[in-house]
Length: 505
Image (tube, rainbow, N blue to C red; front, top):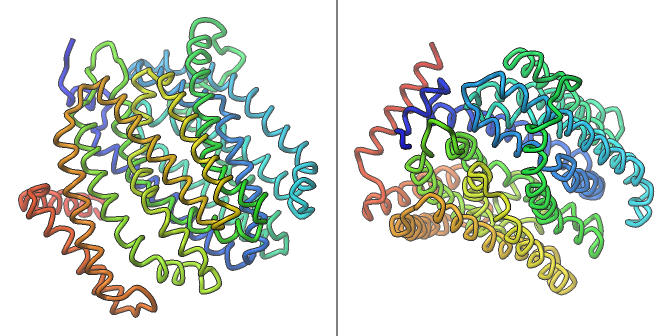
């Protein structure tokens, strides 16, 4: 049974475009707080102490998704399939919360107990308390994720804006205060724990108000079919989460073990700062991917998925050009001259930056299509390749090997997920390949302009002229290749101006 895409948006009361805007606002909020806190901690702690904090945070990130046990994304899939039925959604949420509490508490307790042995293994006594703070943060963040994904699944992304802003503000305030009081890396870790603890409670309160108290009542949670469905699909997602978490943290952990925590202090800051470059992809994934779920009345929004994919290719190409050409001045401006070694890492991560912007749309799309098990071999293969490259090259060429390993892993991960989406949704390959080639040509033109302005010691005029000229060159190529039309530019400007006027009134 088919249905137009607009019907999907109407049922949820939110259009895909509106949800994408709110999702982007959520990501920008996260980016602003994360970037600000990272810049403060980098300078306040210095490379050595920041390296200890980054190492502790990596262990937390390594445990976060396994602690989730795949429950969050599994629940989101079943919630999306029940859009419009709050009673059923409340039953899914309560069952998921009950499962989540057990899993997250177990992993957080494990990290608390393992803090001493881990610090001894790394020969870093100062790592103990940062690890303990991160262990508590894992519990709060894992619970908060459940409610974030629930609101995404039903197309109410604006709820997450309040949730993320509140959590981020508390985390930044607590972290800065504790570091100023002399708590160092441990203070930064416990500041994160305070922020996510607050976020978990705030999310629970929002869910109770929106879905009803039954959604947060674990004693009345279903122990039958719904729980089995959530847990069953979560088992495949758990394997994927384990592999993906290891993939995202293997570089930092191996660099710390092989080259030392000081090297982590040079590798992690650029990785942390480029996180916001992937937010457009995350925003579109949050808006579009839930519309791919198998709903009893609504057909998958294939057209929106294809348009989003093409748009992300163009956007990520525009982002990659300055990362390659201006890596040195970007690092010098944001991190300071003592982080010169980080510029090599940033430039080497350019392929990863391009692919990681597309990754959320194709991978989360597969989850909502109910085909997560097809992702398992892909995630494992990408991890094995990354691990092999790191082990082979870290001792020979230093921290840049971590960037190379990540690039190659994502060159496997993203195309493989795209092929699954193509088979399941019947995507047209030729238009996408044309968009990719045109976007890369446009990025080359942009890079040429940036290089002509200079690649180091840029003045304010250089930044302004180079940025404006590079963007103009990029748009000219897109127009010349007919990837973009004048009318589309006008429509986009009118839409943006209209939203700005409405937000100011």
